[in-house]
Length: 192
Image 1 (cartoon, rainbow, N blue to C red):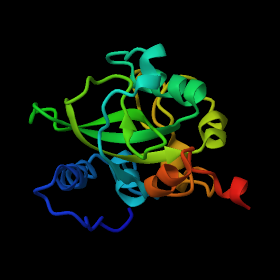
Image 2 (tube, rainbow, N blue to C red; image 1 turned 45 degrees about the vertical axis):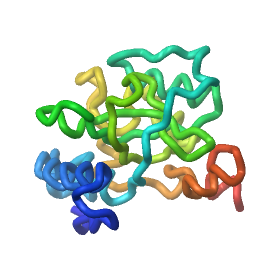
Image 3 (cartoon, helix red, strand yellow; image 1 turned 90 degrees about the vertical axis):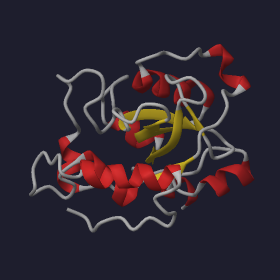
């Protein structure tokens, strides 16, 4: 298991509350011998925090798909050129749900465009911005790239949890880089 994440923001912020919840979810280990025994461990170790964004005007051609975040995020990444992110979202009004596994897209402004949850219902996101090459190479279609997702028969991506993320998995750059360029963060291969 990777070392505990040390949040920069305090627990009184939405991002801090989400990270605190993920620390609790680390206990749901699939196999303690894995590099990342739980999806929450992987997201804490390699994920980034994102703020929610209002529904982008460009997304009007792709209406939200309640309960179908993974397929929606794949669609937007393919159609709009946005970056697919898989991770967790913090529910705004339901302390019972709290943090839930989720997928969204990172828009050029460096914020989260959510394919399945209406504006105002998520307080914070933490996830892995995945390169198109890695996302497609996993062969999971419209399913979750790493976690269980909607179809429990698909199961999690055990190769990633067992061995860790390959070097080409995460989109390079930060939301600041994406905002400055107006484009999706480039992969290390594209930069090299």
